[in-house]
Image (cartoon, rainbow, N blue to C red; front, side, top):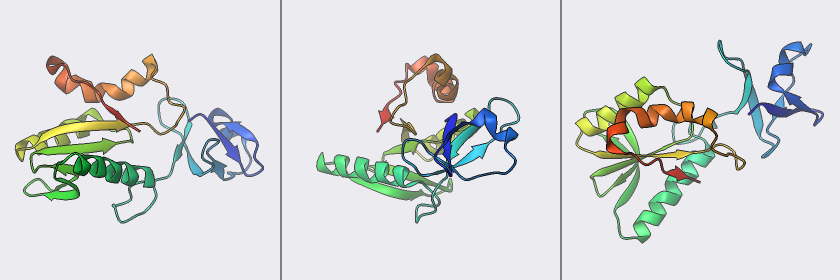
Length: 169
């Protein structure tokens, strides 16, 4: 996100943070949770939600809730759905494992094309079919051409398969 509230509830653009004399605390204008200022080497500065420490290895509450909700829906439909399943031989832990054959990974954060390809190859090597469920961070998210750059790592390795990108909310 490119705007956040500071302590006194004034809205500030990420591009204005460098001009501040001190570093105040920043808050999301939508959910009012604390956010952090990020200044990438290339690209525009932005604000991001902090990952919350939890039993799920630092996953956010939203990520945990999504996995549990999806598992509940699948169980109600008659599938065996387990969360946080360690996968032998590849040192990975699947967000959801369905009928010991499918892995569903719920992905909210950005991921490099290299990491995506490695994780996908690992699950396939272990004999699992893999489906990525891409979530969004804001209830105001709208898919725009600029977002396709973030989605490209999920499409590029599978372009010849005609992959559909499911979103989970």
